[in-house]
Image (cartoon, rainbow, N blue to C red; front, top):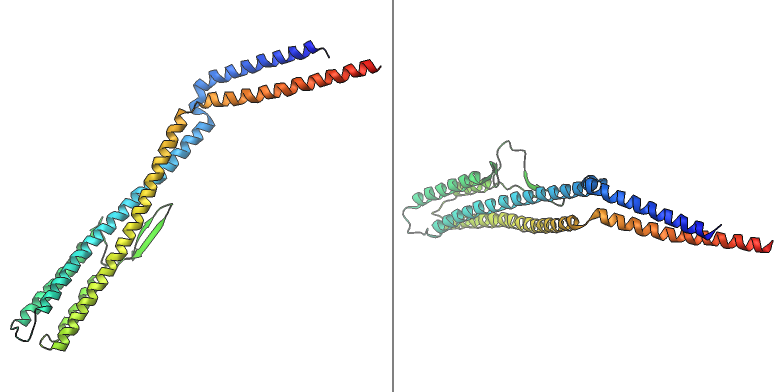
Length: 266
């Protein structure tokens, strides 16, 4: 095989490569945005962005729920403190004990009203309706799931009302027992507040993580927009073809050398 034929083949291959790359460059200007690779990347970005946005919205709703519930529970705690103060003011010389007892019952009614007024998007947060099926407060996303049992604080007021009705405020032992029941009610309200506060902290951490992921996703998307995919693919293809051309030339030279040896050996 003539070495000139090798050079001619390589030159011909070079011309073919340049033609194909030029053709690719021309078409990439038109089809870059519609290529399967870019379209897949955009779809994945949009899907992940939408998922993170939905998660963040769910976390924000959950945080709003916890904060609303905590405000309602704090008002109920204040009512119990007021009841506690009225009970502490009673002694053997108090003449208007029945009047104070009526005031305490009014406070209990305020306690129950607060329970049913504490809502988020028309849903009770610290009270259960008679026929309510949703017995839990849940925040669920693709990344996380949180749930706590919905409290029924009006039941606390009902229990205290029963305690007040059967205890005689003129009897010191009965009065002290009533005070103890109010203290237990305050502890129960405090425990419920802590549950909502703990849920709020977890949701805030998850929301921060979701925001961080959104920022990183946005940065990645900006970097992707700065990449010239057509040029990157052309450079990669040209490098591979050039490398293969070298292997082809070497192979043809070896074939020529073997043929020359065979001719000389004859």
